[in-house]
Image (tube, rainbow over all chains, first blue to last red):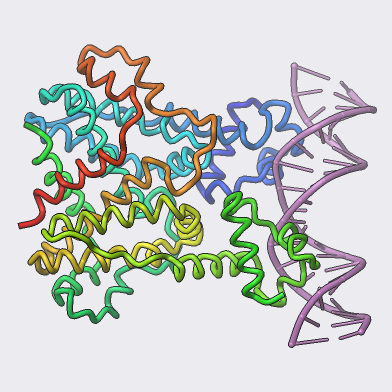
Length: 200
Length: 200
DNA sequence: ACCTGAACACCGTTCAAGT
DNA sequence: ACCTGAACACCGTTCAAGT
């Protein structure tokens, strides 16, 4: 019964069933201890959630740029952030829940800023570039719903598109939007479009 | 005690304090009725949340394009979506919570698709353009944390940037990222960069 | 120092009973 | 048809009491 063990087991519970599924009583049962024992080691559920997030942030793998051209290197960072989001959705769910999004997004900002600097951009212009890239990555996270494991019965926009009959919309566009998006390809497309305008 | 009145009062509670602050018992007290009475009209808390979202979606103002050039018109839609997110964060919070994000984002997709069609893009290429724009809008929503009213004490990435001392990062870039971002200007910047690459 | 048990103030929900 | 009251199975948290 160390704080470490409590956080570890709690983290497993959250990773299995989301934040909501973590209750002090269930956790206590899992630990083979009275619910109130947890309070002696860690001060309540909120602090426990913070501790889990701290651990996830510490364990997060470093973001390393690859490639030779600035565009390639910035793009590789963006893709690495995207992978991280996909691999550890709980980290982002927790960050959002605890209003600690900055803690989680900052390493990504740092990595992008380094490559943007290396590309030769300076000052305000560079800051705009950094933020644009991060907003794009965040947008995919958001719209894909990756920061939360999507349940089985959830409707998609594709189904909604199939029923659209609007003369002001190209029929082939309608059909394309009725198909599941290849978001990886789309991400590369949007990223290159953005970087093409941003980098010198 | 009609379903309408229940939804209306519940909506007020959610708009005031977020989803978590809505409890059947508090709502019942507000309505001057026993908690169990609500169950006769509406089947439980989850269905109540769905009903609130339905009402918010119905009440959402239509997205109308402005301007003459395709770029202007697409950009105006993107800005309108952004305004909507800012004005009714609860709608997006609910959509996320209930896994009904598609219901909320679909009108925006429709509006963007219309303008992309009008701009002359077709098929897969047009679909990529539509999705890119929406992902950008979603990214701002995400990173700004606009779908949730930000609490007072929340740390920002700016504070984190002030402490950075990294030779591989341009000092002026560091300073720029230490200042609060003019997200409206940034949004326009990123949007135009993207549209410049996408539109013919 | 570490853990338990009782207790308090909350939840959502069901269901029989009332009018 | 509409509402209440009692009840059940959950919560997080505090605090005195034990070892």
